[in-house]
Amino acid sequence: MVFSDIPTLRAAFTIRQGLDDAPSWTSVKQAVQEIAAVQIDTVSVVARSHHLTLRNRVKDYEPGHVWKALRERQVFETWAHACSVVPIEEYPYYWHHMQRDPTTYNSWYQKLYNEHRDLMDVVEARIRNEGPLSSRDFEDPSGKKRGGFWDWKPAKVALDLLWTRGRIAVVERKNFQRLYDLTERAIPSKYLNQEVDRDQVWRFFLERSLECLVTSTPRQLLEYISLRNYALDYGAEQRPKNRTKIMEQLLAQLEQEDVVMRIDVSQSTQQYYILTRRLPFLHQIQDRRYSSSRAWFLNPFDNLVWDRQRVRELFDMEIKLEAYVPPAKRQFGYYITPILWKHNLIGRIDPKADRANKTLILRNVEVTLPRNQLNDAIEAIGEELQRFKDFHNLDQIRIERAKPAKLKNALTS
Image (tube, rainbow, N blue to C red; front, side):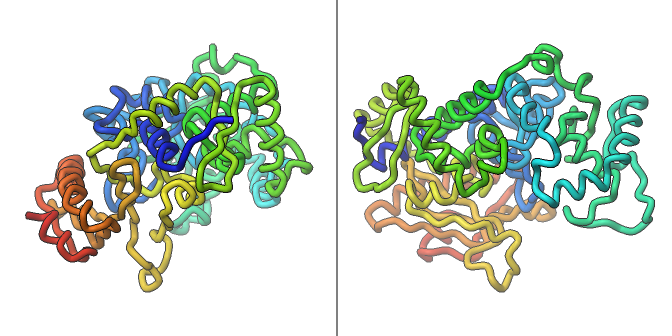
């Protein structure tokens, strides 16, 4: 049994995620390989989430870099933790989920699939004959104006179904819109034709997730790159309510093989695990007690905060996405962005890029620290605020609300 504590687990996790004193990696490809996936999201009140996640981890990152990596087949787009870019080398493992029998999906997916089967063949044939196409290249027979995820035109639904089934792949994004081509033309043959069996799949995703988390409970492992889907989704006997127990059984098997070890964490009732090969890293963190002086703004879709329950357990913070909550019911703001400092979450901001007036607006900012730590934190947050402003090519900063009140002047002076 290995012994540790929550502060060590926090530090190990944040450092492993590339969030120490400076961006840890030199390219999108390297960053995605290190953290397994980067979630893509449409919200654009500031730069979209994938750019913010990569900005924190890639030196001199610019928004076009992720799409360049996609065009060059360094990464591919798939459903990992939501829609994400993942390393191209891992395509064979994700392929297993794409090839599942549609009847094993939920009733909503089956209904969509059955309604669009014929159209999927028509759409695929056009791509085969004409080359890469986007949703805009297909007319909507209804002629009505569409809006929102639940009101897609039929061809757009067919494209998404073809993509999730692995029949087509995203080869580029133009103005954020996907451009699709046939999978055999989009994915390098050495990955497309590489075969892996089911036993390799669950082992790969379990070890991949645990590598990125450093330490994890069985339940937390299910959440990192949707391991519950890619490794465990094989039949009715493995419904979601049973998956934590299944994960415990798989971890026990790897424990017998000396691939993983248990960790006894002080002041926690949770059972944590670690890859045996990562023990030296954990001991290094535990002995040195790393304490980064840099502050980081983490978008609500950052890998560090994907699992809200894990955030509560390790960081003692409640994170809620309020972008889709009616304004009158929001408790903090539209785009809640946690602040990381010294390997802990110490507060949050609600940023907005007023691009027309070249102004970064913080509609709300809150820091929850003892008074004796506040001044050091303010200096670090102020430096990150300047970096955040510059990344968005804005000229000035305006803060509307702040707690404590001194933050308002301290961060804009």
